[in-house]
Length: 476
Image 1 (cartoon, rainbow, N blue to C red):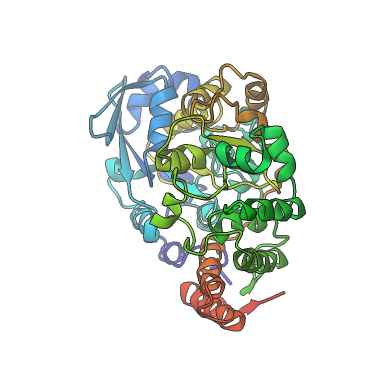
Image 2 (image 1 turned 120 degrees about the horizontal axis):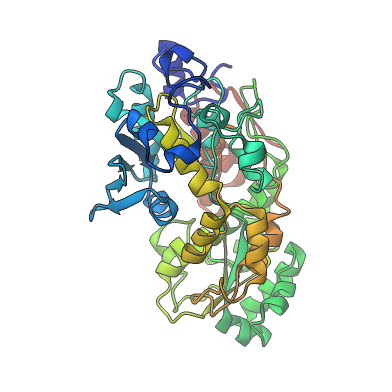
C-alpha cells in the first residue's frame, strides 16, 4: 500500500512529480554539501553575504503563534515584529512571514498541503521554508517517500552532535522509518496531574504535592481516591477524554503497520474504553462534559467546578488551564500522574524546496538546539524544553523556575523524571484519525446513546471514510 504513510493529497503530489526531492542536487534546494548556500551556521547568524544570497522572504506555516513567540524571543537576528504579528524582520532585512491557519477541522493541514503541492513551481518568495507539525500527524510529513520535510543532515545539522542533548524519543518521533531525522522540536511534553489545592485540602487534609502524589500514584490507588472525592461531592477528572493519552501512549504496535492496510485497535485502547465506562457510571467523571476542547470542558477548569484534577503537559497548563481559570494564582499544583505519558509536541521542519536553507538551519538550531535559548524559553514561557541537561538543572532551581500560577511551585521537578522515562508509542500516518474517531465513536457509548457493538461499528464506518485505502479494522 503506497499510501501507507502519506496523506492522499501528498501521494497525489508525488505521483504527479510536483514535489522536488531532497536528493535532487540539480534543483539547488537539496542537500548538496558543495552548494554555495550551504555555509556554516555561524556565518549566517551574523547576517552576512551568505544570508543575502538567499531569498529575502521566509514563509513559516503553523497553526498558532507559539513558534513565532519562541523565535522572536531567542533568535539573535530578529530586529522587529509587526504590530499584527504577521511579519518579523531580521537585521539583514529578511522577512519572516507567519502564515497561521487553525488546526480545527483540519484547516491547517489542508492549507499546508495545498502549499506543498505548489512548492516546486512557486515563486521564490512564495515557497514554504519552514512548517510545523504535531505528534498526531508528524509521521505524515516525515515520510521518506513524501520527502516534503528535509533530512536535517541536508541542512548541515548533525543530530548526533548538534542535537545530542535532546530527549531521544523526540528525535525518534521526528524521524522517518529509516531513522533519518526530518524535524526538530524545542518542546518535550511529559504530562503530569494538575490538581486543585482547595479540593485536596478538603478531601485529603493536605495539598502537599508529595502526599497528593501518593493518592494518585497508579490506577488502582487512583480508583480508591476517586471514591474519596466522590463522597465529598467532587469528580476526579472532568471527562473520559482526559485519560485517553495515558492509555494511547502505551500501545504496543502502530494503528497501521508499515505495508499493511489493516487498522489494529490495541488492547490499551480497549482498557481505556472499559475503564472510562466504569468510571463514568460510578460518578468519578462529569457526565455533562463530553470530550475535550468544548465549552463544558473549559468551564470545568473554572473556580465553580467540582473537578479535582486534569492531566496536562506544560503547554496544557499555560495555554489551556490558565486562561480558563477565573480565580487567583496559586490555586493549582502539580504532582506525578498515575502513569507516565507524553502529550503533543510541535515539530519544526525545513521544507524541501526552500530557497533559504542557511537561515532555516540557523533558526532550527537556535530554537531547538541551543541550551541557553531553551532555558530562556523555559523561564519565559514555562515550556518543558528539549534539553536533558537543562531540564535537570531546572528541576533543582526552585527560584528561577517557580510558577506564579502554581503558587511558586517548580513544576520541572515533576516533569523531568516523567520525561526521562517516556517511551513513545509506535507512530503511523493514521494516528490523528484513529485517535479522534475512536473517541468520537465511543463517546456515544459512554453517554448511553448506542451499545458497545454499535460504537465499534460506527468507528469502523468513520475510519474507512477517513482513510478509504484501509481494508479492515481488527479488535483485540
